[in-house]
Length: 470
Image (cartoon, rainbow, N blue to C red; front, side, top):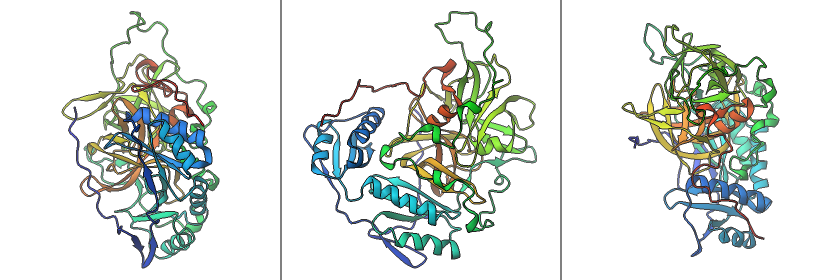
């Protein structure tokens, strides 16, 4: 059992009924949503709730506007638009909540934001708890940027909720110098968030932003995350030595070499964190952040670069944020685990899609282990300088420079790779993560020792096929 740090969220400007930014007030949606409980309401494990939520979203189509997990009572809550859909939801043991905004309206609001208000220092995601598109503006959003954002928000009354984020949105890679591994700055190009002309923020394909179905809780086509073509993986990617591990093939080899998720990796003067060890064509590899993969092509486990780990095979940033690094020694059998505290670790056996309300933990080489909750999906964040990333998982977990690439996980399940955000682990903040299922899909890698725990594994809590009767 790991020690769980309390997450402190400060610096957010929010009122009970309204939010004021730069003198302009934007009303939150009317409290006209109602939850319909039923004596047949069931308790669900998080992964079982995620599977049922995805099934219901598909079955109900335009009659649902999303879903989330209420971890306090272990209930799945599904947003619906009419009484008939509510009855269908209740028959599955989930809670039906009748809401005002449809999936199409939320999708349209996200489209308006990406087309008219994608300025540096902003982020947004669909929040099924409030039935709105949740918009964040960091401390750099002032003057012209604020005016651009306000103009878009005025047209979206009732469809958006707005908060001010503490600090500045940046990727969380760090630099080290003078023989120590302390992060003392951002990677080149990420610190000057105000330098880019807002009119230039179309460098990333705007058509990709927010295109995933907001009601589908992580079921967006993972192949679209960054438009990474699995066929782009180099054909000379390493394969496992067929003579290796002559022992009983039914017993996985003991972990030797490599590092765990959350531990430091070094590329030149940049420090990031390893995300998850994976298998690619039977050979060992690991996932980390794409902006880290852009910073360096070779990575080591020590800051002097003498203990080289591997070489980048594929990296994607911006648009998405993941990199695949192959271990140079193909006989390495790195542990499929994440570093916790006091030498403890958590085995990772599978990968899952995130869901709003899911309790998660994050491990990183700067700030260690912290926990929190998934607060939004299909998030878009504009880091500035044309670096716009889509399809992210939004959380209230803190992170700091050097934590980039580190793992987000829920028990034994891989969930995401640390991208960036605002704040720190003293004051708290918002952190965004690349969904790990999308990275696995794009690279062809599998999670776990020797490929165990594929992204499509049912995992714990599976209850068989779920049917939704009309």
